[in-house]
Structure formats: C-alpha cells, structure tokens
Image 1 (cartoon, one colour):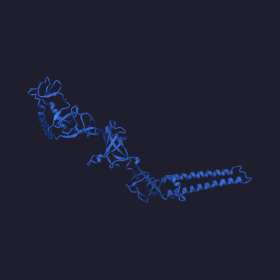
Image 2: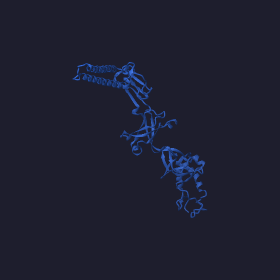
Image 3: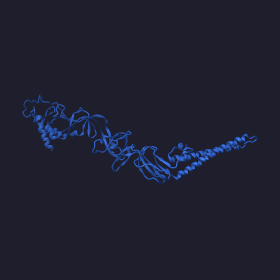
Length: 433
C-alpha cells in the first residue's frame, strides 16, 4: 500500500521539480554562474508538492497549530481512599443495651445523636455521684459547725482554747470539704468521658438537680459531619464495652493513592509536584473534562519484588467533581516539566516523526496550500497528545497529522533520485555536467 502511494506521489512530484530545470538538455543552465537556479533553500526544509490527487490518494489529514497548556507528565494508576482523619469508628465506652438512631448511608451532622446505651455501669456511676455530692454537702456543714463552735468558745467568758482544739476541728472540716469536692469533680470528669458531654455542662442545674442525674441512657453523638458507612449492630442488643457499633466517614476527606515504578521515582517524581487526576478513559467526553488537582507525596512503602513505590496525592481545595468518590479508580498525571496552566503554541504529537537524526513535521506552505514544507521540530514538553513547538510556527498554521510517514519517504526519495551535488552542497537532479 505504501509503495503504490509513494509511486503515485513521486509521479506527481517529478514534473514539478523538473519543470524549468532540465538537466538532461543542459540548455540554459550554467552551473558555473548558478544563474536561473535557486540554491538558497536548505536541505532540512524541503518543499513537497501535494496536488489534490496526492491528498486524496495518501489520505492526508491536517490540523492547526494552537495555543494549549502542555506538560510532560508521568502517569500513575490508582484510586481514591479516605484519609485516616476522615474515618470515625464509634465504640461503646461501657457495656449495655444499645438503641441505634441512624441507618447506613444516612448523612449526619456534628453533634447528632447516633445511639444510646442503657447501662448498669452508668447507673452505678450516678449513684456514686449522688453519694459524693452528699458527702460534699456534709463536709460543708461540718465546716459551718466547727466555725460556730470556735466563735462560741471565744464569746464565753473564762473559756480559753489553749490547745487550739476548736481551730483544729475547723481545719479538719475544711480538709474534708476539699477531699469531697475533689472526689465529686473526678466522678464528673469520668461521666464526661463516658457521655461526651463537657464536665461544666454536666454540673449545671437542670431544674433542681444537676444534669448528670437526669441522663437515663448514655448518648453517643457524631463528632463531625459525615455519612454512615456501616452499622454493626441492631437496636435492643446487648453489646460489650469497646465494641464498634457505627462507622462514619467524611467523603470530602480523600486522597489519591497510586503506584509508581521505582525508576520513575528516581528520575522524575518529587514531593509537592502538581498532579492532575482524571477518570479512566471510556465512552463519554463530559467526564474527562472534570479533573481534580493535588500535590504529590512519595510514600515510604512499596513492593521490592515488582519494584514499585506507593505514591499519595493530597487533593487541593474542598470542592471536587461529582465522580470523585472513595474507592473510585482514576489516573493521575504528575507534571514533571512544562505547565498545565501556561499556554504554548503546540501541534498534535502524531504530526511529528523521526527522520534519521532529525525530528520533523510537515507544515502546509502558507503561500501555497498545494505544497508542504519539511520542518525540523524545535520541541518543548509533550503530554503524549500535544507537543509544544518553540519556533517555526504561528497560530493557525496547518500541519499534516495523517500521512507524515509517506511524506517522510517522499523527501527521502527526492534525496536518493539520480543527480549530483553542486559545489555549494545543494542537490540537483540528473547526471553530472
């Protein structure tokens, strides 16, 4: 197929290059003076005529140069996972019969009631609190009694407290108040730990009694917003202390976890590089335009057998595309050079081809749409689909994207056709003169 196409192309090219420069007749052609012959063209920029017949036969397809954000990237496959800070597993602080207040996949707010525990241990603690409160009140009464006795002794004529008995009684009563108060405070702190209610709030009066005395069942409340992932028990079930009953996650507390080859870590990947995360390629173009961004953190774990290292990407911002979910597979492209924000003049990568020692592309001649110019590519970063070209192009210039291989062969065929070199190094078809 390629051979037939090339034969056709060369048949079309030959008359163009032969016209006005007939080396076989030698007439009107002076190699000494070089008059009437253009030697100014450089060999790296060969022009190839492409009449409409050639375009159709070779199936040439063109694309325009345009300004795009192009960056060289390293691709990582992986998935989104919840950060440890985004997961909360609620375990029972004490044994008892549980009443569940939420369902799986239910959204909850910070402070919302998740479950209640009817526990004998809690009632025993309430009893201890009641006794401690009574002890404190008795101790305070003892101080009043000792102070009254000391005052009375001083008012009675002829009674001297030479041994300071009354003062000692007062000191003992005050010490008992301090001990009873400390005991009550410790028990309230214990109640605060079990209920999650601040100690100061538990001590406040609710009616004529402190709040801790009015709590019939120990509440378990959400400490942050989230979604109920699992409920591991049912209502009216006896559950032992320490058992996990509810698992709540915050879907916004996400990170990307991927795997990189150790060679990529050595050569290209660094901490804090920008990464753009997209869903895996598939039908539908809308979702591929929705990406998330993050910063790279190189992990400390990996698999030495297959020579990989775990890579984590911390997402930027708090708002993500709808497709970003825990356990969702994705592809991360880590920017190793170039920029995903700055735009440079670029052409499709498939328009570029290796030709010997040169990397070239074929530019449609701005002066004649029926010819192309072989250009050596002054390349910048590439993302695989587009490649930055630093020079030789302006915006909206057209390049060949399909048919570059055939054009490369055509330029090679021109160089190998019979001819000779002039003294200045330019090439002419035909024999030597």
